[in-house]
Amino acid sequence: QRGESDRRHWIVFDGDVDPEWAENLNSVLDDNKLLTLPSGERLGIPNNVRILLEVDSLAHATPATVSRCGMVWFSEDTVSTEMCLENLMGTLENRDFLGDGRGSDELPTAQTEFLAAIKPMTISES
Image (cartoon, rainbow, N blue to C red; front, side):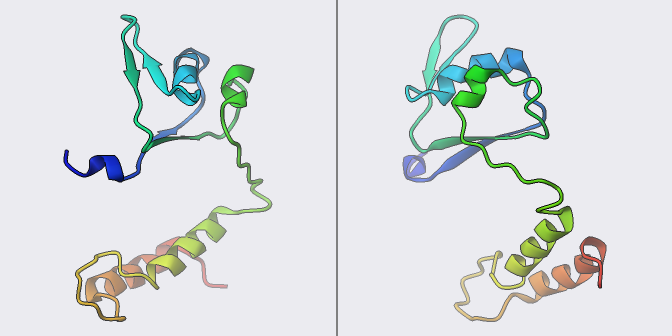
């Protein structure tokens, strides 16, 4: 579509790394960013597309795949799920995600009511 080449797009893989499909991704993760299909056809991945692998373990990842990726690792002792939720809630409480264009600093009522309703389910009061 018109204008899509100016926008960044993300492909997110969430789950364990399977060596079979990861090997097929290696050419996409290289600088040439080509996906080779089983038929031998090659598809170029545009420069505005990024790939993110969110995994619990690299136990089944090959060195070839790992060497092509940047790594960020957080121990559960360092960054807890509750810390992530608190950060997310803080962001949602301070930014108009509905984008209704009113130009006001005030958050839309629907957004504040939604956050008030889910906060007790996501963050424990200490």
